[in-house]
Image (cartoon, rainbow, N blue to C red):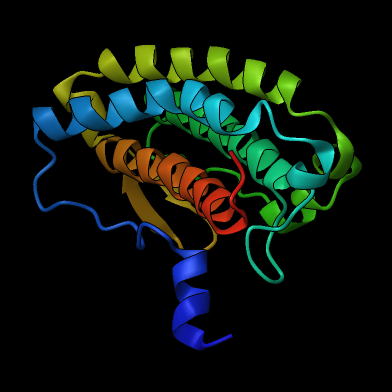
Length: 181
């Protein structure tokens, strides 16, 4: 497989690029994408058989099942990071090893329905929290320990909207490639 093809499989919608200006319209659109991710994920996956759920979306990539569980784990971390940022002054958040988490038994074998249900409630809460952030809240920051980067909440909204769309595109691209309905 050519390097360009692998890069397209890894990043089917491209890598996240933060806008220069986080307008109210941009943030509203991204929050809507976050709010609707659970129903969009369910629509694409709920009817898949175990064999399909256990198919990697690319060579050496996660299976569809792992991607769904990863979205919940990642977005739970997002929710906690926002809460820390709103209640502490520029906190250093806790990172986690998403690869090791994806290799745990629940990520490898658990049915997706409970995770899709978890995502519904989680994304309702994320959307509710994000829609009610003030201008000053949007400027609040946390430190990510992996690279000591300072991240504003307004950027996190865009990043997690992208993250959900990114993984949804992994699934839809695989379904298209395999001609799954």
